[in-house]
Image (cartoon, rainbow, N blue to C red; front, side):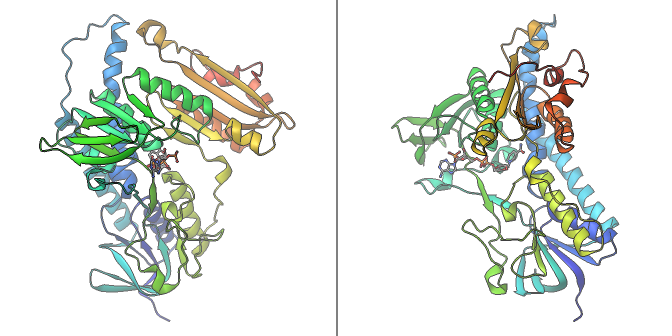
Length: 450
Ligand code: NDP
């Protein structure tokens, strides 16, 4: 059979763009379809704008810290619209780079939503494109609980669209987005309340990490309503929202952000018609090579609902391109995926948490240090840094590394390399530290605490 393309990628986000470019570089004829914006969630309404807003909000604390070092910082003010404008300009620049990278690598780009016509062809804006292989990389979309007033809940996208600063906001959820947003909003001077149904936010993280982050959120002025939930939202004539909690309390706020998770985004694909199996949340089932129940249709990234992280989608996309077009596919090491949460200070983590290690039957030693970082001896702030290692007593291998502190993401990235290479605690111990730094604490943890 003759096809228009060797590979048709559906979704121009992190996983899709990477797969398309790598496949084209290996000589394949490739097209890519994107319905919304090039670069996907990460570039447009996720990782990139989020981190820019984290930087922006953190200056509030930096100004306070500076006074401890002799600076006199008075009359500081923040112009929300300028932050928004400059963020928009940067995102447009990145969109352009994404399009150019695709075009320069010979990938044909189509704007529109794709829908399967038959197992080898998709319709995009009235045009039918056929391909030998198809890769679905359509990402994920926010999930909103079904409550009265659901229509007033806003996804995380809303923060990046707001033209003016709200005075107050509620954030619903206790995961990645909820805690990152709480830090951003509180830092920018917005009265912030986080509502979470459990007793402690970030429940999948190591308990020492989530406890410290929760304490530091409260110290930074975020009001925590824990073991409570939102039962309904009403919009008042004033434009404010009245948010009723299960406890009966009513909060009056300008914005209600919902961060209760994301589900695979497969709505418009017409997958049923071509026999691609999906699970309960709509996730596309794939085998170890990312092939779906239709062997020529592949899927990677959030849409397969394994790990919703950009670098994982990139690695999965690359694997598929290499496997299909004669490269050297490298399996994704799911056991050792580092992740950061850009709270303030940030979390960096890789490997097993203490409860996971115990559940998996490891006999473990725990090494932990909590300390005031050098900067705060003069800044006067009470912020603490945490470093923690989980070590297998039998093999001496480091099973997990966790940090809360400035630059935790950067520190844990380095430690992930060591753990990927199989580092033991003895390897950490014979490593020379960098002084003075927080990272050196990872190589000076002498005695287990339990
Ligand atoms: P998460 O899965 O991290 O958190 C969802 C939160 O919502 C949890 O606290 C969960 O509670 C709560 N929740 C779920 N359903 C309900 C419900 N029906 N009612 C009340 N609460 C509910 O999702 P996010 O939306 O924060 O983020 C989505 C994904 O995006 C993340 O999992 C992550 O992979 C990715 N991401 C990564 C970032 C990074 O790398 N820094 C930043 C932002 C997002 P419970 O814990 O009790 O189940």
